[in-house]
Length: 108
Image (cartoon, rainbow, N blue to C red; front, side, top):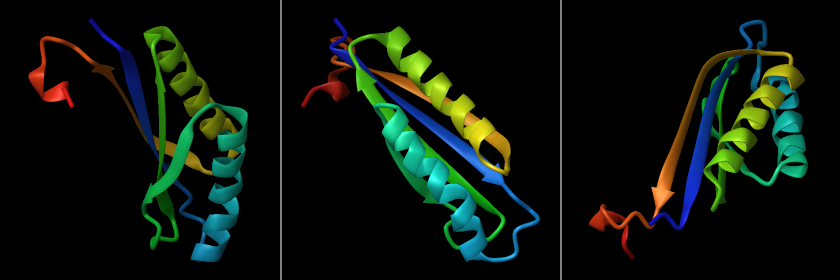
């Protein structure tokens, strides 16, 4: 029996017109901060921190309701896509089951 679900969303955003890290942070950071406030999520800038023209944003949430996890990650993806002056070039969502009795590796 499933205890709950952990959902993870990763999104790669690109802004080829940006010429330095300070300018990129000014575009990405406010969206990440607003996302944390607006949704019950953990959000982090994961990759591309030293690149000036792209970055990967990671989002995670946990719940006992699969549909809620799925809907929340979809809303977060939509929010990221519409709020920033960049292009979303990749998006990946993964939802894992917690406490599945069929998988002994999930036990603590």
